[in-house]
Amino acid sequence: MTGVWHVLGAGSLGGLWATRLFRAGVPLHLILRNPQRLAEYHAAGGLELLENGTSRLYPIPAELPEAITPIERLLVACKAYDAEAAVAEVAPRLTKHSEILLLQNGLGSQQAIAQRWPESRCIFISSTEGAYREAGFRIVHAGRGHNWLGDPVNRQPPPWLAELNLADIPYSWSEDIMAKLWRKLAINCAINPLSVLNDCRNGELLNHPEPLHRLCCELSEVLRACDQMDAADGLEAEVLRIIQATAQNFSSMHQDVQNGRRTEVSFLLGQACRAARQHGLATPELCELLDRLQALLRRHGLPDD
Image (cartoon, rainbow, N blue to C red; front, side):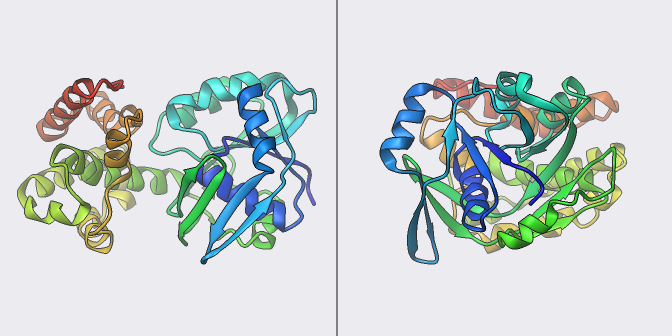
């Protein structure tokens, strides 16, 4: 083993990674945000993972951010809008050559953390795995996907990747992780906001082909302006394929709005609009979509950033 993992954020994907690593015998600690949450975790007896119809409880050691043990490898699995503040809470514990693994949606939060803690190696992760937190500390593994890991600064893969094999976590080391993240951001921007504004399942977006086409065209322009040619190539075809494959699903943003939860709009659609402005691109569809989405969020009493 190559050291102890610390997992910050025991939600859906963080819980999924933590339980699989722990059952493979990888040394691991959860970091929970406050004493109440820690007490609730201890009362639950650990993290419960429901996978392939079988449920199992994993008594993973847990601690608070202010614990004194040093952190060599930190998996940050909280929401994009909480990520930087969450890392700041444990930053005094980071060792000199620590690694921070960033498992966030969208873009923006990863770069902010990498810039603020330059002495740590920041590894970005793009995941298509399906998981959700059913209640308390119960995680449901809803669909096997894939995880791409990469470092935009240092393309050399780290030695602990073998532990992901041991834990049966599907992964690839990507030499161009930004292309993966930009592609996923663009797909999210094409599907999530329209599903919220039309209050519909993903498949029903096929009833709105024109706005979907215009959105994909503008998103492809933004990707090309950001030198993400591979991410732009065939974007609309992949968006349509994903819509068809997830036709009966409600998007994650739709679920957030329906459940009164803050969305990650600033790191998805907001990031695309900021990139367009930085490159002097006119993107009327994207700008109007962001305005309409933010207005809807305000009507629901939710933050619009």
